[in-house]
Amino acid sequence: MRCLAVILAAGLLVAGCGGSAQSQTTSTPRVKLKLALPDDASTTFQDRVEISGTVSPADASVQVAGEDAEVSGGEFAAEVSLEPGGNVIDVSASSPGRRPATDAVRVERDIRVKIPTLVGLEVDQAKSELGKVGLKSEEEQGGSWLDRVIPGTEYVCAADPGEGQLVQPNSTVTLLTQRQC
Figure 1 (cartoon, one colour):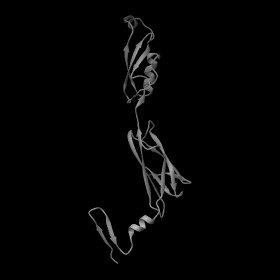
Figure 2 (tube, one colour; figure 1 turned 60 degrees about the vertical axis):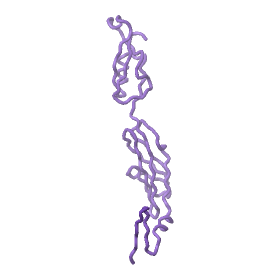
Figure 3 (cartoon, one colour; figure 1 turned 45 degrees about the horizontal axis):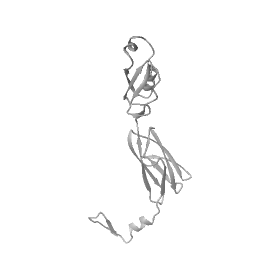
Figure 4 (cartoon, helix red, strand yellow; figure 1 turned 120 degrees about the vertical axis):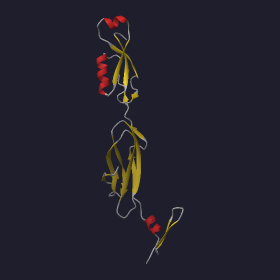
Protein backbone atom coordinates (compact mmCIF):
# COMPACT_ATOMS: atom_id res chain seq x y z
CA MET A 1 0.00 0.00 0.00
CA ARG A 2 1.39 3.40 -0.97
CA CYS A 3 1.15 6.43 1.32
CA LEU A 4 0.51 9.92 0.06
CA ALA A 5 2.20 12.87 1.75
CA VAL A 6 1.60 16.44 0.68
CA ILE A 7 3.36 19.44 2.17
CA LEU A 8 1.17 22.48 2.12
CA ALA A 9 2.42 26.08 1.94
CA ALA A 10 1.42 26.62 5.59
CA GLY A 11 3.95 24.00 6.64
CA LEU A 12 1.46 21.23 7.39
CA LEU A 13 2.03 17.61 6.49
CA VAL A 14 -1.00 15.71 5.33
CA ALA A 15 -0.56 11.97 5.17
CA GLY A 16 -2.90 9.41 3.74
CA CYS A 17 -2.21 5.77 4.68
CA GLY A 18 -5.33 4.48 6.25
CA GLY A 19 -4.17 5.48 9.77
CA SER A 20 -3.55 8.88 11.27
CA ALA A 21 0.08 9.47 12.27
CA GLN A 22 -0.95 12.64 14.07
CA SER A 23 -3.46 10.90 16.35
CA GLN A 24 -0.84 8.30 17.32
CA THR A 25 1.64 11.07 18.27
CA THR A 26 -0.77 13.05 20.43
CA SER A 27 -2.08 9.93 22.23
CA THR A 28 1.45 8.90 23.28
CA PRO A 29 2.17 10.38 26.72
CA ARG A 30 5.05 12.82 27.09
CA VAL A 31 7.85 12.52 29.63
CA LYS A 32 7.34 15.09 32.40
CA LEU A 33 10.40 17.27 33.04
CA LYS A 34 10.62 19.99 35.68
CA LEU A 35 13.73 22.08 36.37
CA ALA A 36 14.36 23.11 40.00
CA LEU A 37 17.80 24.75 40.00
CA PRO A 38 19.08 27.21 39.00
CA ASP A 39 16.42 29.83 38.40
CA ASP A 40 16.12 30.81 34.75
CA ALA A 41 18.04 34.00 33.89
CA SER A 42 20.10 33.77 37.08
CA THR A 43 23.59 35.21 37.50
CA THR A 44 26.60 33.60 39.20
CA PHE A 45 30.27 34.41 39.73
CA GLN A 46 31.13 30.67 39.75
CA ASP A 47 32.55 28.83 36.74
CA ARG A 48 30.22 25.84 37.27
CA VAL A 49 26.53 25.47 38.08
CA GLU A 50 24.38 22.56 39.24
CA ILE A 51 21.28 21.80 37.18
CA SER A 52 18.65 19.73 39.01
CA GLY A 53 15.01 18.81 38.77
CA THR A 54 12.50 15.99 38.53
CA VAL A 55 11.43 13.65 35.77
CA SER A 56 8.51 11.25 35.34
CA PRO A 57 8.57 8.34 34.81
CA ALA A 58 11.24 7.94 37.48
CA ASP A 59 13.40 5.72 35.26
CA ALA A 60 13.57 8.23 32.38
CA SER A 61 17.01 9.16 31.10
CA VAL A 62 18.07 12.80 31.27
CA GLN A 63 20.73 14.70 29.36
CA VAL A 64 22.02 18.09 30.52
CA ALA A 65 24.10 20.05 28.01
CA GLY A 66 24.44 16.87 25.93
CA GLU A 67 25.82 14.77 28.81
CA ASP A 68 23.98 12.03 30.71
CA ALA A 69 22.74 13.18 34.12
CA GLU A 70 22.42 10.97 37.16
CA VAL A 71 18.74 10.08 37.78
CA SER A 72 17.59 8.54 41.06
CA GLY A 73 13.98 8.16 42.14
CA GLY A 74 12.80 10.62 39.52
CA GLU A 75 15.28 13.32 40.57
CA PHE A 76 18.28 14.33 38.48
CA ALA A 77 21.32 16.52 38.92
CA ALA A 78 24.32 17.45 36.82
CA GLU A 79 27.11 20.00 37.10
CA VAL A 80 27.84 22.12 34.04
CA SER A 81 30.83 24.35 33.21
CA LEU A 82 29.96 27.93 32.33
CA GLU A 83 31.54 30.25 29.81
CA PRO A 84 31.88 33.95 30.69
CA GLY A 85 28.69 35.82 29.79
CA GLY A 86 25.39 34.20 28.82
CA ASN A 87 24.94 30.42 28.79
CA VAL A 88 21.89 28.47 27.58
CA ILE A 89 21.84 24.94 29.02
CA ASP A 90 19.57 22.44 27.28
CA VAL A 91 17.92 19.63 29.27
CA SER A 92 16.14 16.69 27.64
CA ALA A 93 14.41 13.62 29.05
CA SER A 94 13.32 10.46 27.29
CA SER A 95 11.72 7.13 28.15
CA PRO A 96 10.71 4.18 25.95
CA GLY A 97 7.11 4.47 24.74
CA ARG A 98 6.86 8.16 25.57
CA ARG A 99 7.47 11.39 23.70
CA PRO A 100 10.62 13.18 24.87
CA ALA A 101 10.55 16.44 26.82
CA THR A 102 12.98 19.33 26.54
CA ASP A 103 13.64 22.53 28.46
CA ALA A 104 16.44 25.04 28.83
CA VAL A 105 17.79 27.33 31.51
CA ARG A 106 19.74 30.57 30.99
CA VAL A 107 22.62 31.37 33.35
CA GLU A 108 24.84 34.44 33.21
CA ARG A 109 28.42 33.99 34.41
CA ASP A 110 29.65 37.32 35.72
CA ILE A 111 33.46 37.41 35.69
CA ARG A 112 33.80 40.82 37.29
CA VAL A 113 35.93 41.12 40.44
CA LYS A 114 34.86 42.78 43.70
CA ILE A 115 37.22 45.46 45.07
CA PRO A 116 38.43 44.28 48.51
CA THR A 117 38.75 46.46 51.62
CA LEU A 118 41.91 48.53 51.11
CA VAL A 119 41.47 51.71 53.18
CA GLY A 120 43.67 51.62 56.28
CA LEU A 121 46.08 49.01 54.92
CA GLU A 122 49.78 49.63 54.37
CA VAL A 123 50.42 50.23 50.66
CA ASP A 124 52.31 46.95 50.10
CA GLN A 125 49.57 44.99 51.84
CA ALA A 126 46.88 46.69 49.73
CA LYS A 127 48.80 45.93 46.52
CA SER A 128 49.07 42.28 47.63
CA GLU A 129 45.29 42.10 48.26
CA LEU A 130 44.61 43.49 44.78
CA GLY A 131 47.02 40.99 43.21
CA LYS A 132 45.18 38.09 44.90
CA VAL A 133 41.98 38.96 43.01
CA GLY A 134 43.71 39.69 39.70
CA LEU A 135 43.72 43.49 39.86
CA LYS A 136 46.51 46.02 39.31
CA SER A 137 47.28 49.08 41.39
CA GLU A 138 48.35 52.62 40.68
CA GLU A 139 49.56 54.83 43.51
CA GLU A 140 48.66 58.47 43.93
CA GLN A 141 50.54 60.05 46.83
CA GLY A 142 48.78 62.54 49.04
CA GLY A 143 50.01 64.50 52.01
CA SER A 144 52.66 67.19 52.03
CA TRP A 145 55.98 67.25 50.18
CA LEU A 146 57.64 66.22 53.47
CA ASP A 147 55.74 62.91 53.36
CA ARG A 148 57.47 62.14 50.06
CA VAL A 149 60.95 63.17 51.30
CA ILE A 150 61.08 61.72 54.82
CA PRO A 151 60.88 57.90 54.95
CA GLY A 152 57.92 56.31 56.75
CA THR A 153 55.03 53.90 56.35
CA GLU A 154 52.34 54.95 53.90
CA TYR A 155 48.72 53.85 54.20
CA VAL A 156 45.81 53.69 51.77
CA CYS A 157 43.39 56.52 52.54
CA ALA A 158 41.05 55.98 49.58
CA ALA A 159 40.65 53.72 46.55
CA ASP A 160 39.04 54.38 43.18
CA PRO A 161 36.93 52.38 42.38
CA GLY A 162 35.90 51.89 46.00
CA GLU A 163 35.40 48.86 48.20
CA GLY A 164 32.77 46.38 47.02
CA GLN A 165 32.48 47.73 43.47
CA LEU A 166 32.65 45.22 40.61
CA VAL A 167 35.30 45.67 37.91
CA GLN A 168 36.67 43.61 35.04
CA PRO A 169 39.68 41.36 35.74
CA ASN A 170 43.08 43.07 35.28
CA SER A 171 41.54 46.49 35.97
CA THR A 172 43.64 49.13 37.68
CA VAL A 173 42.66 50.50 41.09
CA THR A 174 44.02 53.92 42.07
CA LEU A 175 45.24 54.06 45.67
CA LEU A 176 45.43 57.46 47.40
CA THR A 177 48.28 57.03 49.90
CA GLN A 178 49.84 59.08 52.67
CA ARG A 179 51.28 58.61 56.15
CA GLN A 180 48.14 59.54 58.03
CA CYS A 181 44.59 59.46 56.72
